[in-house]
Image 1: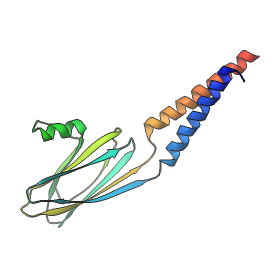
Image 2 (image 1 turned 30 degrees about the vertical axis):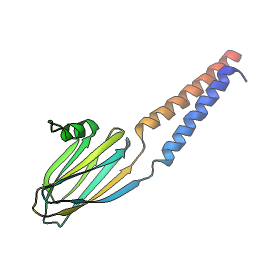
Image 3 (image 1 turned 120 degrees about the horizontal axis):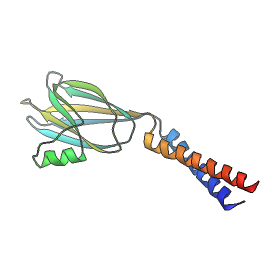
Image 4 (image 1 turned 180 degrees about the vertical axis):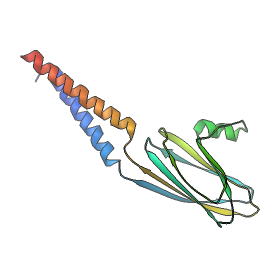
Length: 159
């Protein structure tokens, strides 16, 4: 087997392997966390999110209480901790529950909860990620196409 054909075969197999892993990881993953927030306090939790559609459900207990919810990336969170002005990926003020979707880039995201009431509360956070990871899907397809192209070129050169 010629080196060009061998390289094409290896690349095509690598592309199929990546696509197989993407298909296996495409199942729905759900994370549930209970976060106590002291009266007038602030609590933050971080999660590593992939390039998949993410549905976030926030429940506040007791339901009569309200909380401010912010979703921040790493840079925004560092600015928050230094007391500097910061943006946010998502924010909602004074809610007792929320249901929203995010389309994040791969990385660490912080979910920040501010309790504006005079009593402690419990925040139940549910994060459900589903769908294909776009970045890995593109890499797998690119490897497969490149491998098949090299194999085809090798075959044409042999004839």
